[in-house]
Length: 524
Image 1 (cartoon, helix red, strand yellow):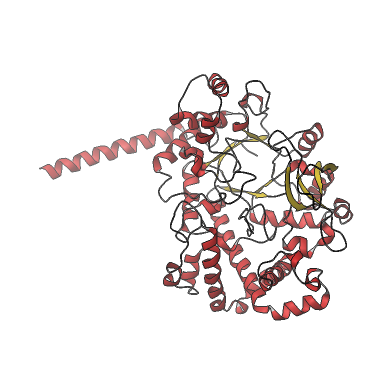
Image 2 (tube, rainbow, N blue to C red; image 1 turned 135 degrees about the vertical axis):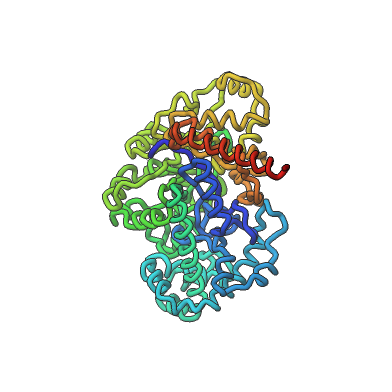
């Protein structure tokens, strides 16, 4: 990974006309802004369809894309929707906050109209898409269609015959839900079509996409329903144990995530076929993949299913380097970022080192006067990615307000100056940009100097997350110039040649002289 800079902004947070960020013209404009600011990477959050709670880390499928991201204006241009139909929908009245309830209610009605008018069954590219993605698409589309028949209930609450995928039940629902199944396949076709176009545009502008995948799948997902053999399930296809984190200083009872755990012996016996397909699919969507909770490949925390807290869990060994050697053998060497935040043990550190993947450094975790956090820039090697904060952190401005006097004093000592709230974001950003880390990724909110209202997610809370959106015009030309200036100064983009700078200055002088002469003529 070369020395470069990037910006973190979820697709949902883009400004757009219809309630949620999408693959619309605003996404293309943001790519232009990234290029203008000298950036080389755009980091996003998982693109999967979200379930209850709206978290992109709890998706109905690890392969499918979120239908909310389909650009409605493009569907209007195709003639399958009208502008009047889209404008008549209520997507919420706050341009800086998502209303997922209204989006769910209105978006799918519009998308179904588009499907009915599309005559998609006549499109050869659609048939090709179905064939090429059958290994996940058939199960996902059926899963979503059956979920509708059971009023959105989780699959473990369905009738026994379809919950356990008995043959006659699968045949029955495939026949009786034919159009609903085709609708969900249509959505995935449009998603991939539009995303591929946007990604190609970004790549042509010199911007690589950093995608993000959770290590685990959601229990209420097509992955778990259709492939119970991959997970630690009993004969009724219910989990034996689930994922989480042990008790620590932040949570006395630990964290109970509830995701099904992998049956790693099965995966090994299949030469990690499912993981190979998963990662191969990821590299169709992204240029670089950030794997969340990387330490779970070394050891994972196992909590008995049915426990109400994580206190009764224990650690078990994961697949380690065996998985990553297999993936490299099958897929070649690919770019991965290891999310190794949290409790680090010698064996986790060894796994990260053996993999060769760059790990993560977060400056908001750095400034503890009495602790060697490992996150201060002087301790970095080149093979890492530095962030001011991630999607789980507060914004720099809000974080600064929570520091103790001792932490602030330590921070000011480290940057060799005392600054106030109006400057602190740029001082911390400069620390990150000037560090030896090969890649520096900054959340856009930190460049904008925004407060807690712009936080993306606060872990272990519900109802207030994943909602923040960028306002149209909030990223100004002046801000882009400042970002580019810092990116050049920190050698994270190609430095302009001296003769180019002189030529530009000369052109500016000539333009100024011409304008003055024109003004004189007007006066005469």
